Each structure stands twice: as structure tokens, then as C-alpha cells.
Image 1 (cartoon, rainbow, N blue to C red):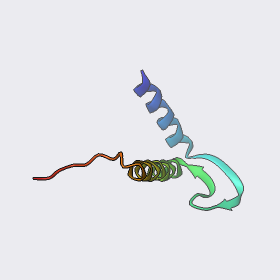
Image 2 (tube, rainbow, N blue to C red; image 1 turned 90 degrees about the vertical axis):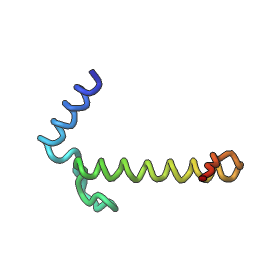
Image 3 (spheres, rainbow, N blue to C red; image 1 turned 120 degrees about the vertical axis):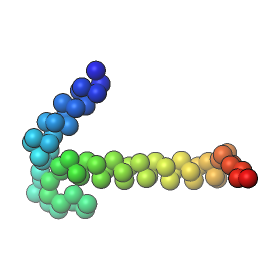
Image 4 (cartoon, rainbow, N blue to C red; image 1 turned 90 degrees about the horizontal axis):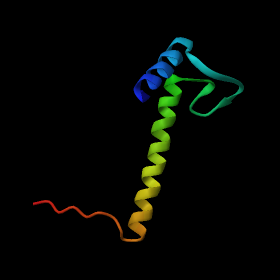
Length: 69
């Protein structure tokens, strides 16, 4: 069911093309938000979450250590 909803949303976004527009220039996106912009936003947010989580774990010495043979 979730996959059907996701497919419908993506299909709609692909058909529409742009999601939002604004007057001023925004870094990374320009004057409009489209599907490619949302994909880039996802990667930027993931990178921020990973870096904050890694720094928190390393600062408290709670990270996972992996031994290689």
C-alpha cells in the first residue's frame, strides 16, 4: 500500500515537473524546487544526520569498533 502511494506521488511529481517557485535565488536550488532538488535535499540532510551522529558517538566513546583479520 505504501509503495502504491509512493509511486503515485513520484508519478505526479514527474508529470508536474516543478513543485514550487519563488522570486529570490536560493543556494543549491535557484528559483524553483523540482524532483531533482528534492533528491539533492535528501542527500544533504542524510549527510548532516550521519556526521552529527558519528561525532556524538565518537565524543562519548560509544562507537562500534570493527576488528579486521
